[in-house]
Image (cartoon, rainbow, N blue to C red; front, side):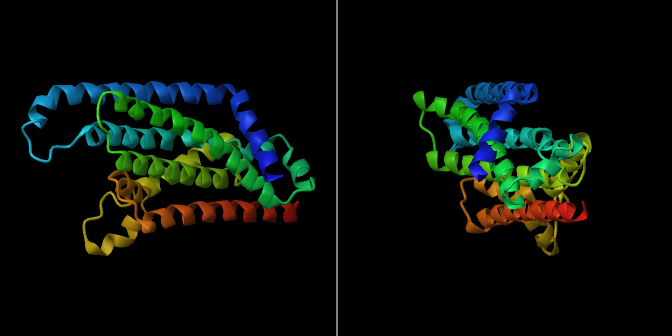
Length: 248
């Protein structure tokens, strides 16, 4: 039943004009960033050839692309998650869904997986850009796929927070704005951290864990953080809907 709900949600996303607009906007922005980085690389290539241990294509083109993608998706994900539950409540179809012979856990996980399938489509289109460079140069595939894994985990974390915020209100726009505010806070929470006492803020920052994977460092600490973040917000969403069902 979970995959049936996921399939329905995935199909409904592609039936929405908003999803196609989002796909187009993401590709235009990232393609511009990608080709700009290539142009900069060609301009400084002669200087790089004289430097010992100079950064390569992966460091100067692919990593910045992933970094830009993470920021773009931080702004875009709330638009994808805002309708997952709040629209069901606004259209008064949530009560029908809750009365169906499926558990709330199946509903939430199914909707979340449907969104993840759509996000994997976006991620695949992003990864194809740096992979195209392999036809003309050597790439650091370990760093490339480490960054791609980090991008997948951070988008999954964005989505988990978004589906929870969507469960708190009937207004999709409020859900989108509150999701963006929460994600921006967790992204920048350690921006002014300068002392050792700020380790807690650094650990809570989404950007800290993503940056480590972007550098090619696969640490179980970072992966565990994202998985706990995702599981935590999905669980909160399930609890929130259970509370709403008991109150109705």
